[in-house]
Image 1: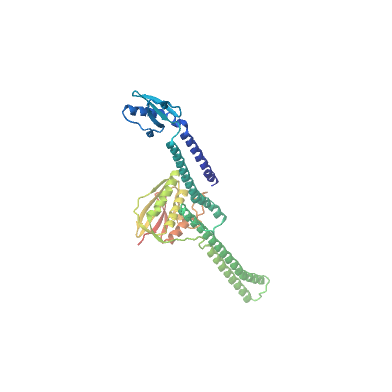
Image 2: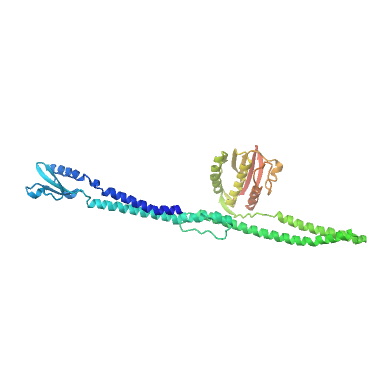
Length: 409
């Protein structure tokens, strides 16, 4: 922004220098130079042709006088030249300084340059106020998001140059804020649960310790008392086991939020975005990427979430395939459209395929490649939320994952 402001301050000076140089060129004596000789020749030609020349028709000529025998004919004040034309002597008065039309030319050029300067300055000021200033404000947004400043919404300006970008960034801000709030709420609930369960476990644990000490010290002499103490220990152990099962059940509950906005959309709406993104990306890596021909149809679900599913599948194919070929094909089954993504490379065994959509599970082909084992789990949950399905299979030495999407009825 500072460099742009310096440019705006420098531009008027540059224009003033241009105006001064143009004025100097237009007002030079050489600009008129020998024009009076050209005009004199034209006058001579007109007289020889029998015409009567008019001095006002020439830029440098102020008068045309034939010799009348008077002494004033050869006056010395002013600039003139003598020409004998057709046997008659003519005196042609002229001036070698710019006339009124020359001054007008200078004024017109100066005015045009000043108008151009005003237009350029106006355009630069508009760009500064409506584009650069807003972009400078937006450039600080990722830093603010990284710091956790998520509460202030982004406001769109009237120019709307960054409308879609601001809308997307504000949505990202809202999603990050919502995720952060949800994470804090889950952490609070988990902490409350653990504190509650740990407190509840203390009671049966104390009873077990008490009964075990009594048994070890022989406080229960009668067999009935000893059996009763053992049964109490077993009951308290069952109670602790229930608490542990509750902890395990909560740990296995959903730790991610899967918001799906169910609507109707065309398949091409999603596939066009997938094609535009991956054809450019994979052309750089040299991976052959092919999307088969398909008939467009109306699907039921969330187009953004379906795009996320297909992206996760393709990214998996890129990461765990051999990078030679990825293809997308389509088929129909009952009232569903099947979208199958296949990739060349190492395939998983049938035993592993049954776990491919489990959370935090990674196949034997993962090796040292980075990953969390959540990509296909997310795909599975999203497809279930959209009332669809997803499955994996191996065929012809290729790994294939198919997303089953419901058509609109």
